[in-house]
Length: 167
Image (cartoon, rainbow, N blue to C red; front, side, top):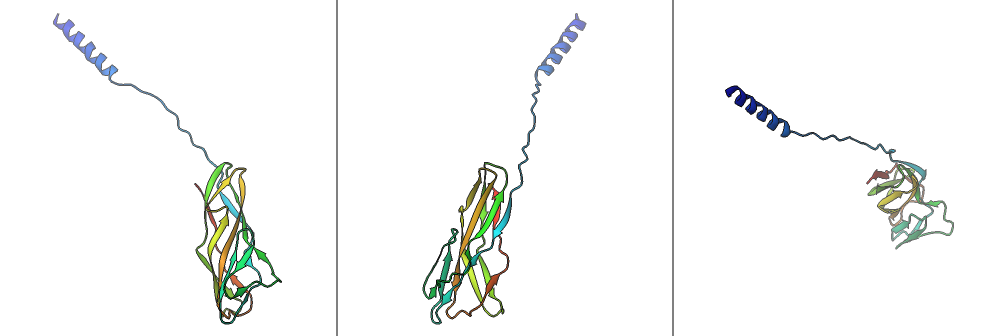
């Protein structure tokens, strides 16, 4: 009887341990998307600008490629080349991305004697883009600050960065 009791207790203990544990399974999945990239199509050009000797001002180049001036800066009828910077973004379709523009860039006279600053960069689209078909164009404008009596000549900046990142 004693052997039967110990055997029954052993089976009971084994049954309790096997019911205290349960297992489920799962799978892991990952989606690799195309890397986002940006390429330049056109450089920014503010065109021909005239400035008074006693009063400077600004030239505002919109992403649409139009420009306006303030204070002592005028825009001659012979405009020269006026273009907003243009880029193409490519990546996975239907994703959105953030656009980061520079805060400012310095344009230096070809003789290295004077500078002007371009700042207040704007873009179209503004801040966020959407890759509905896997590509989207971005246009970028800025405001150029021109000093009174700015030396005549060609002013050029170094490269400036427009950065895109998936949201």
